[in-house]
Length: 269
Image 1 (cartoon, helix red, strand yellow):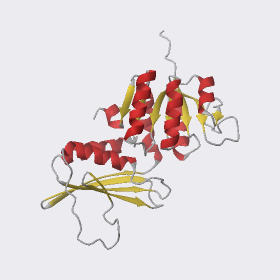
Image 2 (cartoon, helix red, strand yellow; image 1 turned 90 degrees about the horizontal axis):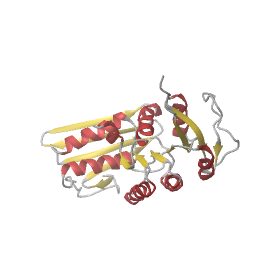
Image 3 (cartoon, helix red, strand yellow; image 1 turned 120 degrees about the horizontal axis):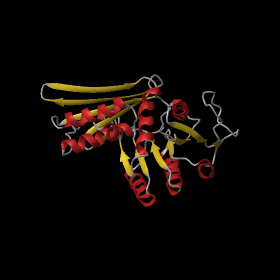
């Protein structure tokens, strides 16, 4: 009988955050994956308090020292841009792959991640949104962008989200602009009674950010032409919607070198 493959050894950076906790549980429960470490800014105990885990998961505030002891294959990071970049520099130097779901990464950040992957011969998957539905929304928005000259984006998140607009909205607008081949038509109002009422603007696409406690995450893209409109909408009902994409990225990054941007690249849509 052939020997079974060794599980992919995963460290979760930001493990006590809302997404970090969900990801840790998903890794523990997924065949072929093994959680071997967790990192949080401030820790008060040596091991992660997780009843689902069959073994103790070391918890540390120092990613570098943790990686020195746990022989990880992949670090998963859903923190913030500054922390993600620090983690990426540490992990890639140790030949550890990265899966990053942080929003707010700049084009310069992505260029640095790509360079780090190339120099250290590892892989990184970076996506502003790991939901399959969100990836499909971006793909459909790219398709519609070829046929309309007017478009606006409304993105909806909970009131504790730190950045605006969301990384998903920016990625959607960027993809739409690329597919359209030129800036969209952005109507200017003659008199704006309240400043910034028209939202932000990117390549002619107005982007509006809602921050309310009743939302988790969602986005609507509205296209307009003569005598018609087309609306595409995705709502994330719970954070569980991101987990299949994260698990897929962990498995796929082991097969790749360099930077892969967007879940759609893994789904091949």
